[in-house]
Amino acid sequence: MSLLPLIPAAELPPVLVTGGAGYIGSNAALALLDMGVKVVVLDDLSLGSRGLVPAGAIFVEGRAGDQALVGRLIAEHGIGAILHFAARISVAESVEQPALYYAENFGETLKLAESALAGGVGAFVMSSTAAVYGNGPNDPLRGNAPLPVSAPVAPINPYGWSKAFAERMLADLVAANRGFSVACPRYFNVAGADPLLRSGQASRHPHHLIELACHVLTGQRERFTIFGDDYPTRDGTGVRDYIHVTDLADAHVLLLRACLADPGQYHVMNLGYGTGASVTEVLDALERVAGQPIPRHIGPRRAGDPATLVAASDAAALLGWQPRFADLEQIVGHALAWERQRLSATGLQPG
Ligand SMILES: NC(=O)c1ccc[n+]([C@@H]2O[C@H](COP(=O)([O-])OP(=O)(O)OC[C@H]3O[C@@H](n4cnc5c(N)ncnc54)[C@H](O)[C@@H]3O)[C@@H](O)[C@H]2O)c1
Ligand SMILES: O=c1ccn([C@@H]2O[C@H](COP(=O)(O)OP(=O)(O)O[C@H]3O[C@H](CO)[C@@H](O)[C@H](O)[C@H]3O)[C@@H](O)[C@H]2O)c(=O)[nH]1
Image (cartoon, rainbow, N blue to C red; front, side, top):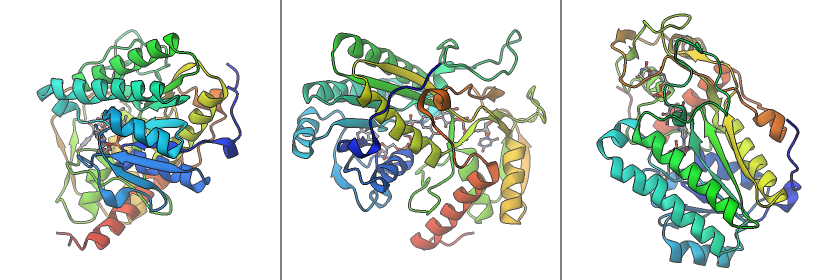
């Protein structure tokens, strides 16, 4: 595996960031703005919040699949690359409303990609997910080894399928269109917040481990429920590969530079650190950082949760990606600091 060619960072064109009023999109927009790149955020605010859009970005309220609007934005702002984060991301909701997930995560992505092609945009990066691997390596033959990007795509819910189909569709568009490069990074568990606390997670319906544990520490919830302690892992609780959102954002900048350096390429890769932390280890790290206990109890397993999901990541070897925030205490520390700041800014009283 050798390093992909990259265009110089200074040559990055204006970038359209869909979903830039959400958690990951706003952090990626910050990474680009910090490098002096012009950013246009397109978000329908269905799940995100206007307050998360970075100050330096141009904000447009609208849908990623609105081809008239996107065509106009590409022409008006000289957009040369698209980071497509806009999507629905709840596994449980996808099981209840599969049509919504196929329309939003597949249909809107197709329309956006058509707009990109029509507008001559050279680089298109779509957020994919470890959910495309389904239960991953948790079978008796493979054990819990880190997942290579070549592992079988075998989603177990409509969310995972909607992203897997979108990946496939984008690969086909690359094959049929000259000058169009696509990257589909598969994120593992995205966590943490901007180290300068300019953006972080602020879910309308929180369900992620670290966000919920921070809610316990800030008095917004009484206690934390561990979903099962009888998994075949080192302490019986689920193991995941938590990746700091700022490291993820850095990888996106590199992906854009790689796509623009070599037209006609399709890149798919894992984004994780290749190490896992158990639920108990995450809670313990948060307790250490906070200097405060997290009241916790063991509940039943959550349906559909695999025991272990850890990435065998090739991003470093392909992109020269160098994670800066891989330390678990730093990840949870930034998440907690963000949550405390968010609470004081919204005036919401804990308890
Ligand atoms: N959070 C994770 O751990 C994780 C893991 C793997 C993959 N991902 C992927 O990363 C991406 C971003 O996730 P996130 O955690 O930031 O979610 P988020 O809900 O915080 O952000 C999504 C944003 O997209 C917007 N949006 C949704 N549909 C839209 C549409 N059709 N047009 C315009 N805007 C629309 C929402 O208003 C929201 O601001 C998603 O594609 C998700 O599938 C996230
Ligand atoms: O209240 C809680 C919440 C979570 N967990 C556990 O914590 C771990 C992480 O769970 P969570 O933070 O909900 O993330 P995942 O279910 O691993 O899913 C995330 O990571 C996937 C990629 O790995 C993405 O596809 C998903 O969008 C994203 O939500 C799992 O073992 C859960 O069982 C608990 O024990 N209690």
